[in-house]
Amino acid sequence: MPEGSRPWHEPRVGLRSRVALSVTGVSFVLSVVVSLTVFAVANQVLLDAREEAASLRTLKNASVVLSTRDISESNPGDVLTALSNLSDTSNPAVIWDGGANSQSLNSNFTADDLPAQLRDRALLDEEAGIMRYQTDGHTQVAVAVPIPNQRAAYFEVTPLDDIADAMSSIRLALAGAVVVSTLLAALLGSWASRYTIRPLTRVSTAAQSVALGNLDTRINYEEYRHDPDLAPLVENFNDMVQALQQRINRDARFASDVSHELRSPLTTLNAGLQVLDNNRSEMPERAQQALDLLASDVDRFTQLVEDLLEISRFDAGAVRLELDDVALVPMIRNTVGSLSRHEVPVVAEPGTEDLVIACDRRRLARILVNFCNNADKYADGATHISVSLHNPDGDDPLAEPTVRIGVEDAGPGVPPDMREEVFDRFNRGDQGGARGADIGVGLGLALVAEHARIQGGRVWVEDRVDGGSGARFVVELPVLQVRSGEPEEDLSLASPESTGNLTLTGEHRALPPLGTTGAAEDS
Image (cartoon, rainbow, N blue to C red; front, side, top):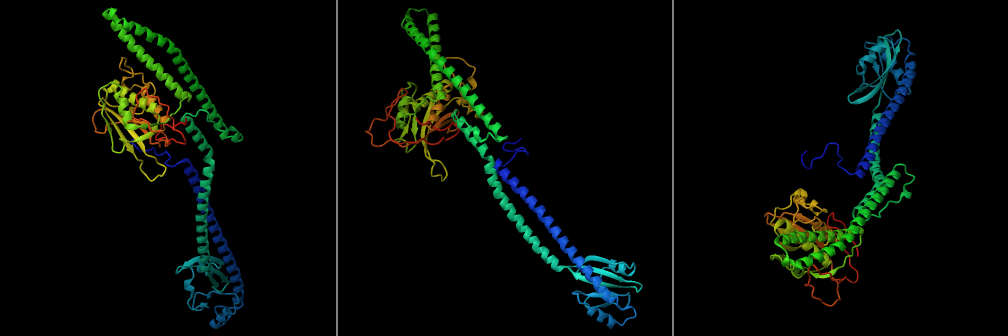
């Protein structure tokens, strides 16, 4: 299936819209059906009433004409006089005997204007009849009364234009009613959809809260306990979150307990390795090689334990955000320079060289160190670090500028389908199964994501800006206001070990999350 295409059965509108459209559609169909039914019934009732009245009137008037004993031998003037004496005729009346004695009160109306079928039925079959027909665009109803044994008949024609005009007015009124009822149904459907979807919105909000780490989130079951459809949903959701919270807490406690228990033997191992290393010169060459391998693995194991302890603190929510006034570019240069590697240029865009922001200095330093360590392990080291300001697009007055720090390398790069997975725990990309002193345990980038998240930022990996081989790891942090009224300090002094507790005084706020990594936690 081409990218971006959807199956024919996949809905293209939201649930609320579908509910509102369904109510509107049903209302429209019902309104049309009711309107057509009312129109048809009203039209038929009016026509039937008019035809019945015309039949009764024609029979009454025919009795007057029949008072002339012999129509065929009567003087035409007598017939006209009899017709003119009819008190209840507003339309032409015609007597026709198949010859020259056809008479009509209306000179514009002759026997030839009558339907042939009705004439034959009255004259030849001598049967009374009624017929509705159209002539010159006008609808009329003709009633025929035969005159027995005289080959003559009495006809009376009644126009129905007034009924047609009345039905046109009714048609317009019904069409307006359909439009109004459909609009009202649309409004009702919109309100009903909002009311109907409200419980699902609460579930969605609660699920989002759980995804952000608030495992204590629950939906009030008492509000839905009497609803046979929603009560099971709410109960199952709460049970799921409860089970998830218990499992995460159990796993976090296990990792934390194991990590704590391993610190004591690791301390002993490191002390013993230090003693052995002090007597390295007295060891044979093979023993020295074994000592180096052991020291490398113990260092790697120590780092794993420390990272696990840090991760467990994040999982347990036992982290504290301490905002410091940080001169960003000097702090980055000092942090990278203290790593005792080859010199990595730090390029700051105009406007960032003297930028001072409020952030957690220790966590930002750990982000930079982990990025650089990752570049050392998988790409022969970082080649370039950039600092830039990013102003969000759009006219949103609440949008805040951010600062982006990018660490580039010249390694093999990260495939697009793995650029989100590299920030998962224990993920080492294509070298996930490799072993060696230079291969990490897969927690460095996961810690980077957590350190950025707690500061209201996010991280990602992309191609290098210049299009060359390698990857660019980016951390984006909100530009928070620095504190005021404090004595000036040397804000450029920073290193990976910096843990300054210069917590901001007064009110401050963290920006909302800049991606899918979650919101910043208040200290």
